Image (cartoon, rainbow, N blue to C red; front, side):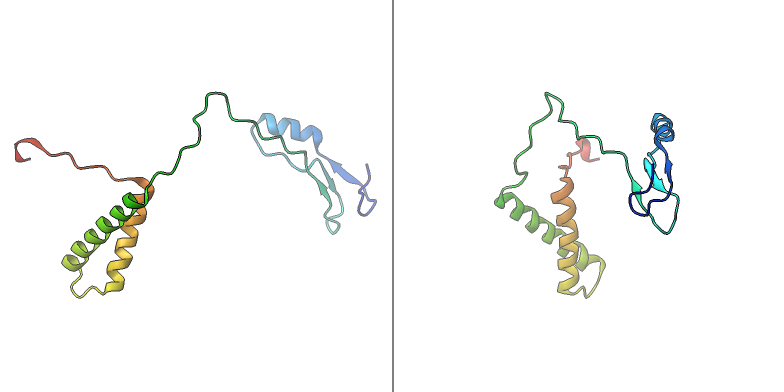
Length: 122
């Protein structure tokens, strides 16, 4: 095969790719021009995306309502005020809002576990 760009010789890596894929490695270009300055390559065709297996979970709906999202932010802001004013004397409103945003992002992304009340005052 000749390079379609410069008509020079090309490397044929198809056999090597069979072995590389069997070893779990990424394939190289199927064909590559031997002239480095040309730079032409032809990659193997991409495998089509497989459909989701039958029985997979359907897409979930929204996790939050506007009310629950608002409640989460209010709680985040209250926690930020409590901890910033206790730990950082003279905390600016900007610092408190930044702390609230950090708490809110983590809570809305990851969720929050309710604390379990301990028996016997432990």
